[in-house]
Image (cartoon, rainbow, N blue to C red):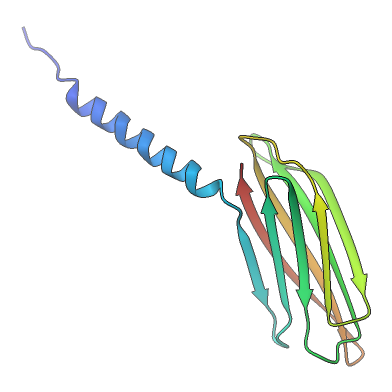
Length: 133
C-alpha cells in the first residue's frame, strides 16, 4: 500500500500563506501617487486610515487651481464611491484634506482630478492612488 506524502502540499500552503501575509502587510501602509504634466504642474494624493488628501502645485504665475478627490471602496468586483472633497484657490497651489475612517480589511482607491489655469488656458491633470487597511 502506497502512502502519499503531505510534505509538498503543506509547503505550498505555507508558501501561499506567507506571500498573502506579506502582500497584506505591504499594502496596509499609506500609498502615494504623483503625476507631472508638460508644464511642470504636479498632482499628489494620499490615503491614511483616518483621512485622505489631494493637492496640485503649478508653476509660479498660475492664477487659479482646483482639485477634486473622490474616494472609492472596493467591493467584490467593482469600486463604489464613498466620499469626495474639492477645493479651489487663486494661487499656484491648492489642497483638500478630508477626515474619513477607512474600514479595516477594505481596499480604497483615490482618484484625483486637478485643473490649473495659466496663460488663459485650463490644463487638467489626473492621478490615482490606492491603499488597504
